Image (cartoon, rainbow, N blue to C red):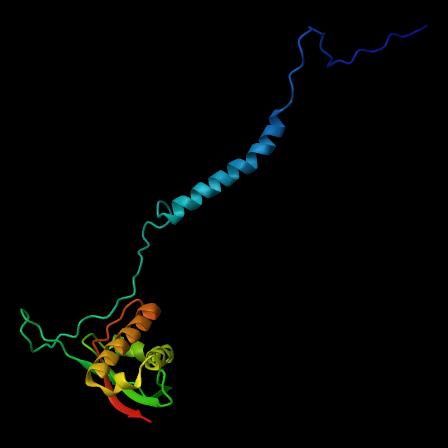
Amino acid sequence: MSTPDPVPPAAAPDTGAPAPRKRGRKRLLLALPVFAAALGGGGYYAWSHGLVGRAHAKTVVAPGPKLNVDPESDPAHPRYKTSYYKIEGAFTTNLQDSPRFVQVEIGVATIYDPLVLARVQTHEIPIRSAVLAVLAQQSEAGVNSPAGRAALQAQLRTAIDRVLVQKEGFGGISDVYVTGLVIQ
C-alpha cells in the first residue's frame, strides 16, 4: 500500500501571481549608514554654528590694552600717561655694505596700559630678532645722520609692533628711543 505524500501545511495554493521579493532588509542595511552619516553631519553643523547645545556659552575675547588716561586730566580732553621699558642688552650687527658694525640700545614707550609692556617682555626674543633684522638693513650713512636715525626709530617701532600683533593680536608701541649708539 502506498501512502500519499504529505502536503506541507504552510503551502499555499498556486494562484499564478509572482511571489513578492524580500528587499526590505537589504535596503534597510544599505540606507542605515547613509542616514546615520547625514544625521551626524547635520547635527555637527547645527552644533558648530551655535544652533544647538551652546545656548548659554559665550565667546570670551581676550581683552586688549586700554589707553592709560591720566586721572587728573580733563575728561573732555584726556591726557595719556606714557609708560617706558628699556630692552636689556645691546643689539649688535654689521651695517649693510660696510665693514663696520653698529651697537644700539633701545627703549620703547606706550600710552596704553601696562599690558603692552608686559607683552614686550614676554616676547623679547622675537622682538630682538626683528630689531636685528632692521638694523642689518641700515647703511653707515643712514645711521650717522639725524634723519636716518629718525627713520630707524620709525622702522624699529613698526617691527616691534608687528611682532606684538603677530603674537598677541594687538600692538601699542608709541615710540622707540635709541638710548645708546656705537658705530665701529
